[in-house]
Length: 384
Ligand SMILES: CC(=O)SCCNC(=O)CCNC(=O)[C@H](O)C(C)(C)COP(=O)(O)OP(=O)(O)OC[C@H]1O[C@@H](n2cnc3c(N)ncnc32)[C@H](O)[C@@H]1OP(=O)(O)O
Ligand SMILES: O=C(O)CCC(=O)C(=O)O
Image (cartoon, rainbow, N blue to C red; front, side):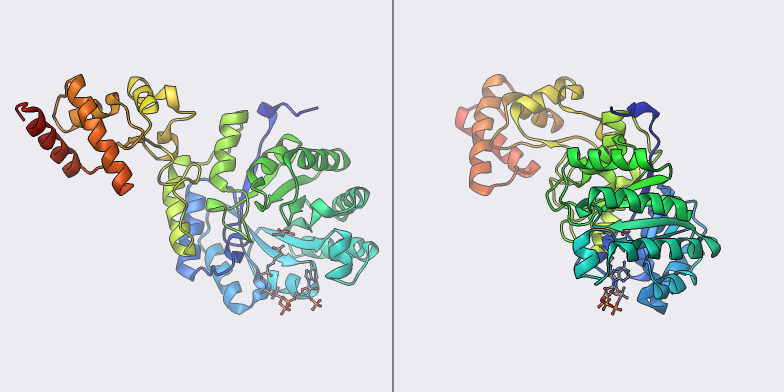
């Protein structure tokens, strides 16, 4: 049975600075990492996964630079569940350590050359050691979506018995759909009492949907990245998960969503990965309307064509003229220039606007509109 959505509390753990930076070709500078961490924390993101200490001294220094900011956000470092990574993490002042271990047979055998028993022994050995170092411990189940179902439950039970506070379910290859995600997380929820975190990848375009499904099934934490940055097709975008939770399920993450455009631009610039114009929530064009019927509806009442107000995410509606405009759009656009049109003038100008849009594939500028007005007046002999 579905959990009652309004009883659900979700903690966002944003991994832009870990999995986000793993995007091929992306490397943040120290200043960029600090600026992103500050912006996310200022917006109210509760947890940040900020790096991989075993990468070396430079990375540890960067992680330490962020811990020294004493941000309100709780900080997590990532490592493999092995000696070298735990020793490196021990040099960092983070609150939470994520110790990652493959849990699918394919990775246990073909990546590590080990067996299931070894995985359970590692968990039993390393979780207490990380706890002794004073960290809150999350065990990252890499490739959990391809793990044998019964073994995954044994892993989760072992994680709980070992004393860890959280198990991260990683759909490492982005292979699940929301129904399978719900089923997997629901079984885990019944097996253990510890926190569960969903880490989704977007290879099939389902990262947000799978993250929501995991939360409805009882996941307490959602791993996200700004703009959906991350390995290959990326992770679940922060802005999509937060807005979907709010608008689909009335689950409030207490994040200042008006900060999304700023954070998105910051990450886009630092990563060199521009935001597609049609990217939900933060794309440049997602609150821009051209179609005549839509613009007419928006002019009459924005509720006609908005699922949520763009002001909620620090944006505003924009209407433009083009091939699909109607006469109301034209009258409105000219009124904004102080020119009151008759119906007849609006229709003539609409024809000129359509021709312009077809020839140039651009919306007309203010200068174009003024020129069309004068040309139309000259043709019809009307006073301009
Ligand atoms: C799904 C994920 O996103 S996991 C996170 C992936 N992120 C990254 O890899 C980014 C940072 N990585 C790095 O800087 C480097 O890969 C390091 C420092 C972690 C390791 O570097 P190297 O020691 O040179 O090893 P390399 O990366 O070539 O190979 C990975 C090794 O880790 C092992 N490994 C992988 N996962 C685990 C694990 N959870 N526990 C233990 N060992 C692991 C592999 O088996 C391999 O070791 P092997 O040669 O003994 O088989
Ligand atoms: O094990 C983890 O913490 C998750 C690692 C990861 O990024 C993934 O599996 O996609």
